Image (cartoon, one colour):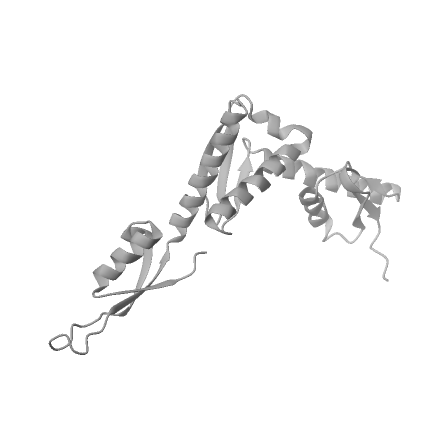
Length: 215
């Protein structure tokens, strides 16, 4: 969230104009608190400046991040000659960008590894221009949500099998975010426990029967 800034001028209206000039926005984009109304004094003696405290409205900040992300992605896809159109949607506290077009499926191959990399790069580029702020989530037609549902189903089936066979069950290699989904899906179960194993791209989750051993 943007930090609050203080502006002073001869009048409140002039202070608001100065805030808009510096921040590059319109008055309706700002949350404004008047600290001092200011006064002209007697014959100019004892005059006090008006003072206001402002910050950008959350929806304006989200809109700026969305526009910057879409601009970056359009340039990226154009340079790569990819037929993909990014569409931004403002959520409560983050920006969601859906990729549409015949080449969008390229980013969902191999479990969405390329999609994760694209999202990471997009957030880095936007943060470099606008500072750290609300996260930007990049998706392809609900791929992330569907992938999460499949991972949770896979985790529960592995847990049932581990309980039934009394043997550990290894799941396929996953990235850190996907492993976390699996761990969270089974964290409340008392009949199994999970651990990550392997190195690098072969890092995966193993579901063990029974509760974890006490150290």
